[in-house]
Image 1 (spheres, rainbow, N blue to C red):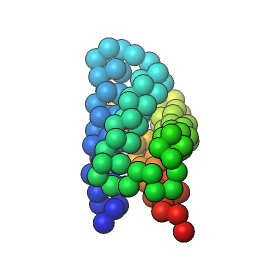
Image 2: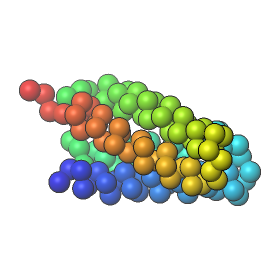
Image 3: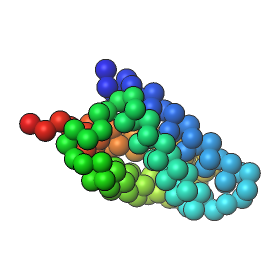
Length: 125
């Protein structure tokens, strides 16, 4: 059941990420690379807040400060993956940045869930 709740939380964060990315790229003509970083970071903060409220129990394995640090470390890997997929789809394949963002978001979703579920918020043995 956690995956279903995380799908809703992750979907909400993904929508925020996508809409902010689109507004920056299409509305404000911000470079897609910078827009990807800004929107991803904002969505990560939202994802953490929603995750500890609706999906995972905060503090089950790590103290809050460590937990937040680990979430952002895991999200850093997700950000690198996000940017790599965006670069590949936009620069190499020639996709529109908005379509590429959908692909990048899908690629990162399962990494984010797995890192949180199986390490950061996994209860102590």
